[in-house]
Amino acid sequence: MNGYGTSPIELLAADAMLRREIWCEHFTYSAPFLAGTPQALGAAGGQATQNTNINADSDFVVQMMNLSVRSDAAANVIAPNMSILIVAAGSGKQIMDQAVPVTNLLGNFGDAQVPSQLPFPRLFAAKGTVQTTITNREAFAPLRVEVSFVGFKVYYTGDKTRQDIFHVL
Image 1 (cartoon, rainbow, N blue to C red):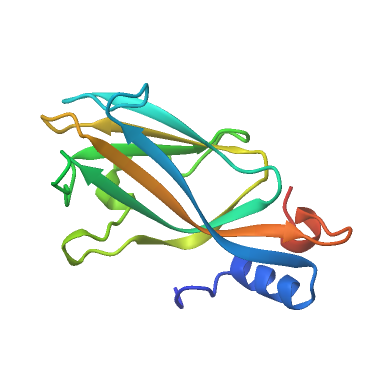
Image 2: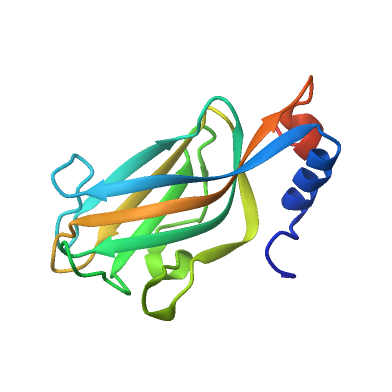
């Protein structure tokens, strides 16, 4: 990998933006799992799913994902024992073939760690849904678990479409 911003999807977006066929803006979508909500994670095997809806006004290219886990109001969990499965719910396309440990897929900012830069950014279509399922293998029920999808929104100008720019459906 040559570094951040050099994947084909990013190069296609940069080229189209220079031609004024699209406009891109940084954006972050989140999948929060909060104590006291239906998506709260229980202790030792607790599992929850969070649906993140992609806005209808634009497609979204995710370049980086990260994770934040708080065991209580003051303590960050650096390497949580949890697994994650991400599915592009509209298309049913999984990001991986099975649930994986969160530390294998997601980075975080704790203890000199860095967020997970994807080896190849992924485009999520407008009006789509990203379904994130987390299984907690810790002995405690976390106060807050948040998965962030960091990237950019793609707004099409004139009569240009996703197919014209990215050559995908």
